[in-house]
Image (cartoon, rainbow, N blue to C red; front, side):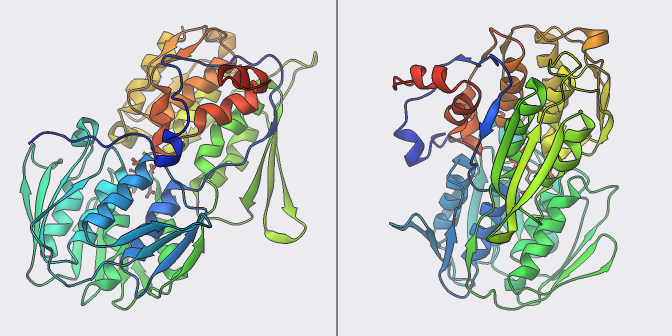
Length: 472
Ligand SMILES: O=C(O)C1=C[C@@H](OP(=O)(O)O)[C@@H](O)[C@H](O)C1
Ligand SMILES: C=C(OP(=O)(O)O)C(=O)O
């Protein structure tokens, strides 16, 4: 069977001109200053879509992200019998699929390169007796799946490996009784746990999931899943560390507002940090389950100042502002951060900061990023070398020498490996390496189709407008 490919644009993004390829990454002419309003969170949007598909009535999502990953999730849900409609007011309405009713024919699900689709949809598919074939981009066929597939097999799904065992593509057949216990090793991805837990309330007996391996990476994302389920009326217990019990029951229909994507806020906030500028992101939740809230702690380690001003009318959110550090002469100064551990999907942006920092930085606890959109440790080390900086790659860490010892990055044509976060990594470095170009910046459509325009609008407002043929 051949890998299929969905378009990388959403309908809205398709109406905008494609970015140049290679894309000239704007260099900072001075301190970057401005406010950027970010689209909705990928992790929250795709969780909401999945939960809506098993709710007991139509659900409404406000501020949902429209990107390749969410389009793929919508496609998967529709293939399984849900309906997703864009309302005239911009909200997204999801009509749930008929849990328990048999599917007709063999249903194809295209995951693209979306971890949330490849790891969340299979357990959802098990709720309709039938046959589902799950595949994705060539890059998805090397992302780990085995523990999730094992968990599905333990709970009543027959798994046929159509390619290399433990990877996509797979044919899943469900029809018999659905089991209520799974033991999985989630040390390769937190998404194995989230995928099993998200729709477990609709299994006749719920589901108990036990993690059998070492550390779960990105534990914030499991906590997000658990808090999210509880917030939507699903009972989840944690009887012991590494064990979750989802009780059976209905998922009440809901109307939800999606928070902005705080992980994708990273590159914009980093732009302030590396240029001695000041960047604000409005609608920042005062309290959130998103890992991107960690920018509040990470950026100060690089010498930036972070402030949060609650909205006077709504203390549940506010504006986060990052002010970059400067030296005695007013020039940008990024401090080496020492060790920064377990940054998960934030790591590529942290790597850009580390490449531009004066002193050394070690990114540790990121071994599982080898199974992300690309092997991010290898990609970051290779791209740092292209920028002229020697970064030491260990099994689960990267060591950045700092510009004082290893030199400042110089212009390069950056490769992006179909990885949105490698593209934004290169854009941040490009601010300080004039002449940098980025191959396939359009890969940012995975989670932020507007990235090139948002970036140009913030860091080079008039140049961006000129490139787009607008009046500056
Ligand atoms: O559940 C989620 O929404 C995610 C979990 C994390 O996956 P890993 O645990 O595989 O890192 C994260 O990196 C990914 O971007 C999104
Ligand atoms: C790892 C990521 O994505 P995915 O959801 O595809 O795993 C990411 O966005 O950094």
